[in-house]
Length: 220
Image 1 (cartoon, rainbow, N blue to C red):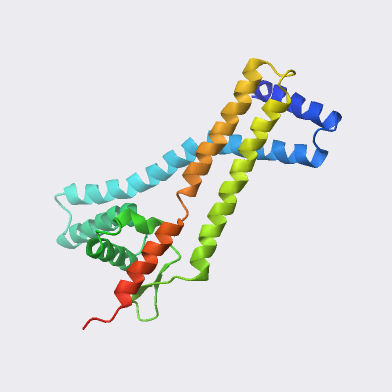
Image 2 (cartoon, rainbow, N blue to C red):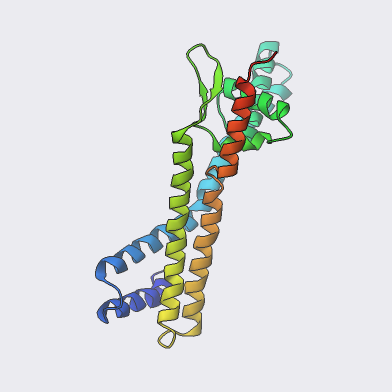
């Protein structure tokens, strides 16, 4: 693995020695690249581990339902738990109150949103003191959108930096080194697309505000 990074490290060292970039900038580039590569190597392991945990709960519920000696109460609890896990995959919420609220909203306003729409709004669907669920909008919601924009811009700058390094070392680098830099830039841009989908967009926020307006609108 160190042999794979050796050309990149040498190029960073060349740019630092010739004053093209500062030492602090070079250190930042190396740290960002290490974090990015570790996330790629570990992402599959983390995803498989999460899936195994989810499937473990489902398998336990299915085992109870298929058990002839299980009591009616156990079967009923297993059915409820299995339904809760399925709803969690749809709307992203773990508690039953929020799940039912999102399912009701998705059913009532199916011309506006789907059930997966609410996955982006974990902090906006809140449970009040009387165990009633409501929608919370405002500055905090737009703050989440702003954080998503800043994070996306950060990744785009890193990807552009790799492209800049490739253009800067046009004569010093061989073809495969340019290819590695462009592949890294493409990987970061793909990561940017995936991460940006986890944050609400301006259209998503406006749709949620419209749903809240219709929910709170008094009926005649």
